[in-house]
Amino acid sequence: NAGVMQNPRHLVRRRGQEARLRCSPMKGHSHVYWYRQLPEEGLKFMVYLQKENIIDESGMPKERFSAEFPKEGPSILRIQQVVRGDSAAYFCASSLRQDEQYFGPGTRLTVT
Amino acid sequence: KNEVEQSPQNLTAQEGEFITINCSYSVGISALHWLQQHPGGGIVSLFMLSSGKKKHGRLIATINIQEKHSSLHITASHPRDSAVYICAVTGNQFYFGTGTSLTVIP
Image (tube, rainbow over all chains, first blue to last red; front, side):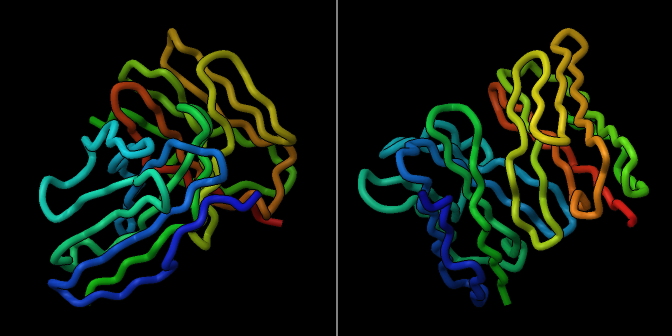
């Protein structure tokens, strides 16, 4: 049973471009969480999704950021018109129910 | 004031020592999580607990709901335990502590 997969592991974007981060949860898991870790800072919650539903997006910046978890396929975190301040590690986690979360390896986004 | 406070921020121990990391929180929670982040950045969920005590190998986690406090203990510490340990709580929202950086010296 493969763990949580995230791709790409490293992503470089120029300012103004779009970044798409993908997260494939563990098999059977229908809950997905996205977290951001800015350089030299702690983890911050961004969004919690179940299949086709956003449950809690209280941690998402109001502009440029969006997330989805379609019926089929991975969860996508999309950042439009990236800025240097978006450079961070983005972690995804999944769970079977609202219980123990399993983390992916993260995507390190660098905005140049 | 942060909703989740951890102490100490940094901890250096000799191999074999018993280690305790503390976490206090100020919000209502449904669960508390202890996470381990390795130097390479990967994150592992160690425990999720809402009451009492859990044990996994050399790791023990306790929580006191009335006092809003949790501790993570590592017995017979080893250099491979060197990592950042993060306390997180889930309730109405998700809150993370800033982490405790542990270094175990051989």
